[in-house]
Length: 44
Image 1 (cartoon, helix red, strand yellow):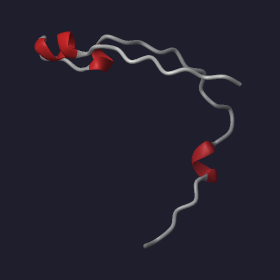
Image 2 (cartoon, one colour):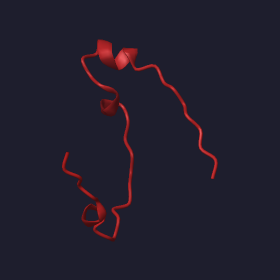
Image 3 (cartoon, one colour):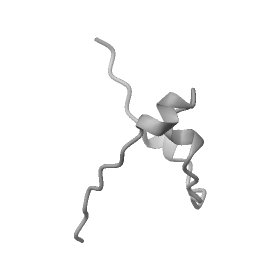
Image 4 (spheres, helix red, strand yellow):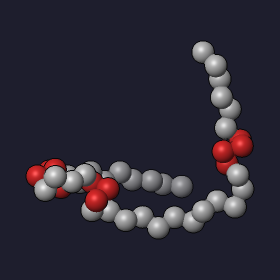
């Protein structure tokens, strides 16, 4: 699998008192398995 990174200019969102998440929208599929149960928590 090949992935690429694209950098975008977020200055205009900053000037408009917003953040980049205000100008983007991502549609995701909710996982069917409870991924949070697979996380391991290590105590320091």
